[in-house]
Length: 335
Image (cartoon, rainbow, N blue to C red; front, side):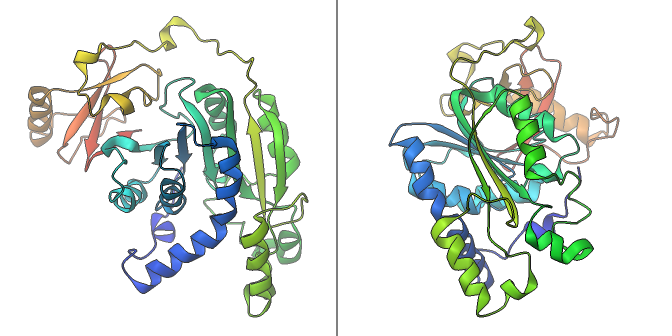
């Protein structure tokens, strides 16, 4: 999965263009405040946003819901770094709550998340069902999956044909709403609500004055119970009676509290090895120094058989010590 992060990386928030991008994001996501409030109800829930991009939605959620534990991840390091910077001024934001990961492997402990949100990420995946299966695994019984994807059955796609904005090299899984529903239900979710957005894919609705009308509808309603809009929106729930079956090799190996630094124990109870879903712990300073010396000597090889070029700030170790994941700029790289 390769994404051009420059396309998704806006100007810094202290610039005019950056503030304009934030305002557009606020207008687009505003209706989710009310919808999510009905689920959260002032409870201390854990929310994960996959494909967080530069952190627009996460920053809003941090302001809306001060009592939640919020985790964000993206495949692109530059986007995770920007999201972390945007959220760093929030006193309740933990250093390790942002991490780099492949959503198809989703390095999160089973039944650790209450709400998983993923807007316009799933179409970038080669095997989106892998993400949905992992989403089902990491959600607690009764937890919610909310995602959005381009709608090839929308009016905009029908009118624009090959010029439709949803057709791009990095959109490799563009399915109809019916197909998304079929795949999502097949992994065990039940449908709560679905629909699609307005007509922003049609050029005339991107120009004044029709753009005011189009954005006004999104601002007030968010999405509608029809399947002809620009993007499909699905709200699904993991049944409360569901159980997760796994072999012993996939069971998390817990660590005692004295093995973890207190400020990191919360995040380490959520993230895990993307391959085995076993727990991770922080490497001690001696091991980190040893690894950096091996990097300097070009002796440390990645799982892709390529030499690691840059030193690491810290590292996470898999439960049995068979895998090490670097931490750079406070961001765990779980690829």
